Length: 247
Image (cartoon, rainbow, N blue to C red; front, side):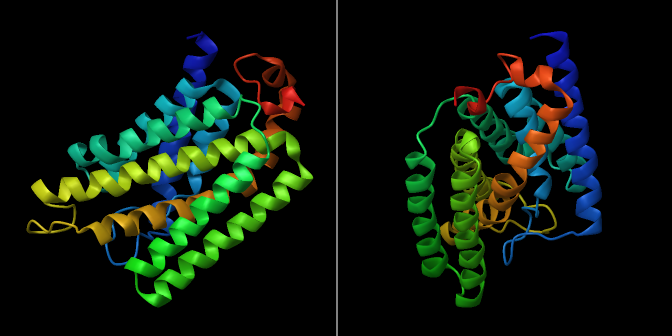
């Protein structure tokens, strides 16, 4: 790893900590009913670093950043290592990896369509109707946004596909690990052991994916474009190349 990558990793983690901590205390929104998992628009920060500097910078920077955030907010290192650190590392490493691949436009289009349908079904099958409708609306609007991005800016198709894959993997880890943790440990904010059911895990899956995907697919391309215009060397760097260089 180059010295530039080390510096980028540290900056990635630092920005993730600062914006994560500040945003939570300004707007402390968590998943309905089950709580804990936070509303997290700053997901875009390590995604940008993952695309420009590669999977390791994005993944490790996010893992370090979320661990520090968790210690500041709920203070449980076991839960953070099981769910937060693993999900963030996998998610942003995958985004950085797939962003440099030349993905056929049909993949993000069809893949996200299938995922949308599955998540909407999960929402209506396991959640209250009003909550399910809210999540489904966000998911479907995100799909429309994806269609627009694919049509208008085809050079970002690989980033969009990578975001879909990475976020789905990260959301699935959270949806699995938090309920597993709850079977053996007291959840932050509780005073007794309160094991989560499968429905609780599915709530986390739908919540995490539906509340974070809009920030990735809508704000990712313009932020990356601005970064490449400000620092052209990053675009020509082999490690920071995106699918834009394949078109």
